[in-house]
Image (tube, rainbow, N blue to C red; front, top):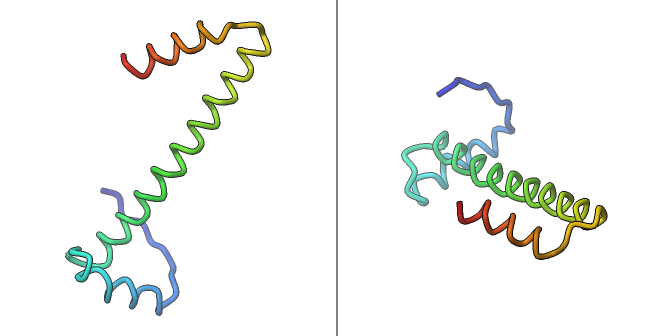
Amino acid sequence: MTMVTVRMPEDMVEDLKRIAPILGFSGYQPLMRAYIGQALRVDLERLENNTVNALVASLKRRGVSDNVINEALAEVING
C-alpha cells in the first residue's frame, strides 16, 4: 500500500467513522478505500465501454462488417 494524504471536511470523516462499523469495516479508512475502489471500477468500466464503442463505430465507418466485429468482440471476451 501507498500512504496518501487527503484533506476532507471533518463532518465527512465523522460520518465515515460512524458508518464504518455498521457496514462491517474495521475503521473509516478501509471504508474510504472501498468507496474509492467501487467508484473507480465504475468509472473504468464506463471509460473502457466508451473506448470499445468508439472503436466499433470507427471500424463500421471503415466498412468492417458487423459479423467480423462481433466475432472479434466474442474472441476478446471469451479468450
